[in-house]
Image 1: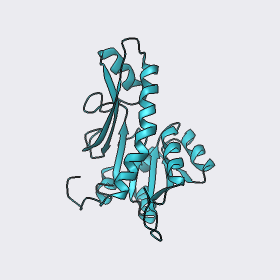
Image 2: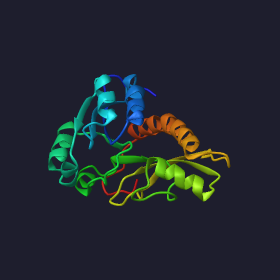
Image 3: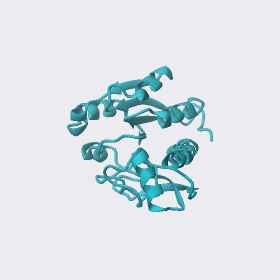
Image 4: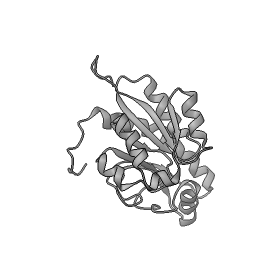
Length: 205
């Protein structure tokens, strides 16, 4: 999907806490895009692999402490300077500040490794989710891409994508299936959002 020529690319900022494979996948996807590009990666962990992945792909990467996230004036100043069209939480484990959400309404999205509202909420991330899915005997799981609000995993759902769970699957098997969905769909959903008109401020997306 190509944007008209001479139109400035839209700007994506990614927040991540860990390895950053989803962040890397999104960065690479938009390297060839006329619509958007990832311009900044922020992580609340100084030694997070995502920072090195971003730097290796020539994207600005910065550490922001938990204290700076909880009192986000510095982070907010950085974001206001960038003026991102979309903020993507890709494995970001801290609760996202309401202060930032209010400044960027309908511009913050998250990817969750389960079919919300199942297996969401505080503490439900990564392998904890997959272990809970297997333990519950679910026959399917997947990913949810949703807008972020003031509560964990409760924002309006943008899209969900499903995979099966076999009786013989362990948590690691489920994780691989979910990662495949994440790599395929997160960049596409971001692209569709940025290629579409934005909801008006205060309007439900």
